Image (cartoon, rainbow, N blue to C red):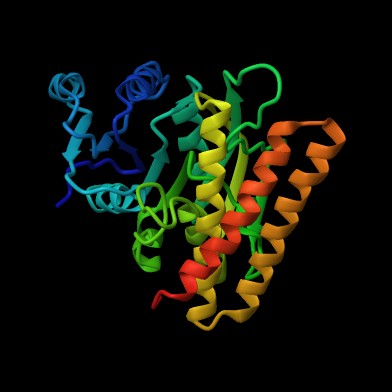
Length: 300
């Protein structure tokens, strides 16, 4: 059932038990220079936050799906199916777009009819000083088109912000609900899996530095260890999915890419004498191997 219309785009936000972050994001959307779009909030909080429900009741642009299930990929699927607009613009609930974000997004969508996917410059916001690693920062210094069967999925964009044609999401079968936050075994790689399938299908991504989003760095250093453990396991699951579905070349490419990234963490940790980076290297390497072992026992 369509609950959010609009001729160009609608925003979808998945959230779970982070009402303060969500409120900040909704405040940022209220400050936009262009407010001619609707917003779908898929709330998996338990119980749902009453203040958010009241805010939805008071703003006709906002729509709420109270979902008793769990999982970011599930929430994203529920969100896009409720959108009637041509494009679905996903924002993580701990992100804050610049005040001209929606205006610039509309301009970029109008200017790039060839694109299936549009993303922008995601900067880390509020990171603690000292030894720290920013999460899901995706810098776009200049306009860029990404396409081709072998384009690396991490060069397409992260789930913090991405706009995707609704018919492209439908063509790809949506988000794989076996991957992503909320999935105990593989709590990440949902965006990498989607990006990979998009590129493999012949899709085109356009990256614009004019689309600016700040991603809040609210996690502690100990939180990062748990997060990167999930990253490693999920990437192992992602690779074994490709193996089990016959994409041996893709599995080899992404295994090499992940090991290169993990190895870079070791080099950085040694060079910068960063105890955190060295711990993340060990955590992610072990988790990647463990994720492959778990994934190989699954029927994908």
